[in-house]
Image (cartoon, rainbow, N blue to C red; front, side):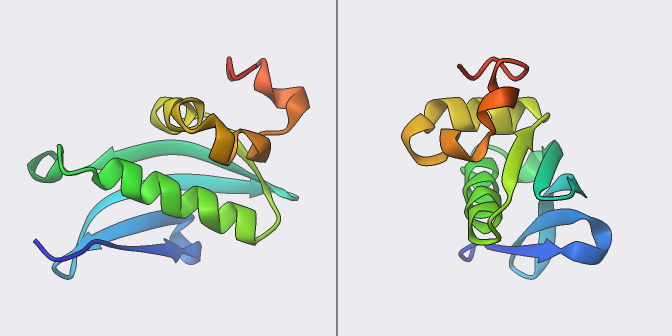
Length: 104
């Protein structure tokens, strides 16, 4: 397995993770003004257990930061990733929204 690549497929409103030229996972999102709502994360079953979900989550959150947007983690995996990496990503979730996502 080659190193995974994460890209923002803006036309498809999703981040995609590719391994060996094949899209093996994605995060669906939608934008509202300066906020990016992360709705759903999926990794193909054959590729689970290789850390790809964490790789795409990190890349997506880093991209959101680079764009100066806020993150709304509706996806349970993204929400738990932010919770596990609070020092790096909690600030992306607006303070007024944190209680809704159980990220206090």
